[in-house]
Amino acid sequence: MSLAEIEARIEAACAAAGRRRADVTLVAVSKVQPETSVRAVLEAGQRVFGENRVQEAEGRWPPLLAGFKGVRLHLIGPLQTNKLARALDLFEAIHSLDRDSLARKLATAVQARGACPELFVQVNTGAEPRKAGVLPKDLDRFLADCRGYGLPVTGLMCIPPAEEDPDPHFAMLAGMAERHGLARLSMGMSGDFAAAIARGATHVRVGSAIFGSRA
Ligand SMILES: *Cc1c(COP(=O)(O)O)cnc(C)c1O
Image 1: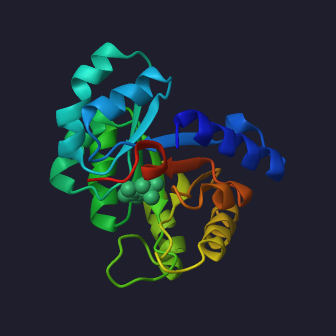
Image 2: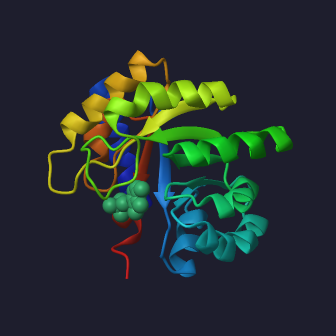
């Protein structure tokens, strides 16, 4: 699908849900894609990109950031604390705040810098044993701890279990965000971004539908 087709689908999903297009950010997930594809999407006008590895993003983006104005990068994958400072140099949003040790170190680093990226807490809505994210039953406590550390969390993120209908997971995440007064919802990928928008997604993370499948 072209970027224009994805745009049209996002527009349609917003219209169907009675939402404004401006309230949904398309995060184009460029991980593992060749530079020529990323350049083509930049040239088509896309400006918000998601990467899931700090190191890969560091290798790819500095020359592209120099060449294209107004690009914003979001970290959507796991963040190791030893890469925290480098992540803060590069990303304006982190979608994968998922554990106490990271929250503590992030709070210290953010305080030293006097600036904080937009923060989403990743919730393991399916309580999958090998998946990152805070368990739903632990979320109240985790958010309270983040507040205690002075971390301004503004949203929640989830990756529903691959083999399940994602809609109940989107609904669950939306309910948790509402209960906590969090305005942002990072949910929906290539196969289900329209369903996520119907449930209130403010950030959809779309990779393969834009770029084609990853090598
Ligand atoms: C890769 C990835 C995506 C994009 O997935 P597609 O199915 O290619 O759209 C979204 N979110 C996260 C966290 C990812 O790692």
